[in-house]
Length: 182
Image 1 (cartoon, rainbow, N blue to C red):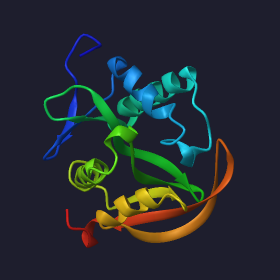
Image 2 (spheres, rainbow, N blue to C red; image 1 turned 30 degrees about the horizontal axis):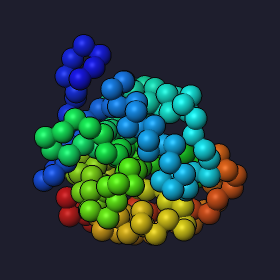
Image 3 (cartoon, rainbow, N blue to C red; image 1 turned 90 degrees about the horizontal axis):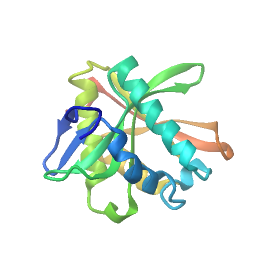
């Protein structure tokens, strides 16, 4: 715990607790964001300053929107194994509500990303009352495409977007509330 109080839990799944990130998560967050294998889709090496900025940006999102990227922990442990959550992302002159996920590679291939993404979808359609949920995924990110498809998303668009490493080909995966099994 940090900031003088308890972690704010957003939702739980069968194996996971998804909660707001705090200062206590800085080391675990750095292990994720500074790992080139985990962050290859961003085309950018993260520094300690970038990690701090990332955490500050999430906490600002919590204050502004009531959501952002949250810490993913295993039930019974406060240790952050990844992040998943909801953010507003620019898309073709507007914004879309996006579900995103990143896990420490130690926890890959165990179904945690899918479980967290499904929880994010339930939260978006339930607690937030959203009508549509998207994921913007780099075209060669097969693992994230698989996660998106596993929660009912389909490829809705293809486009070029700019990230740290330059222009990159992306897909917009999406699912509508009324077409989704929540």
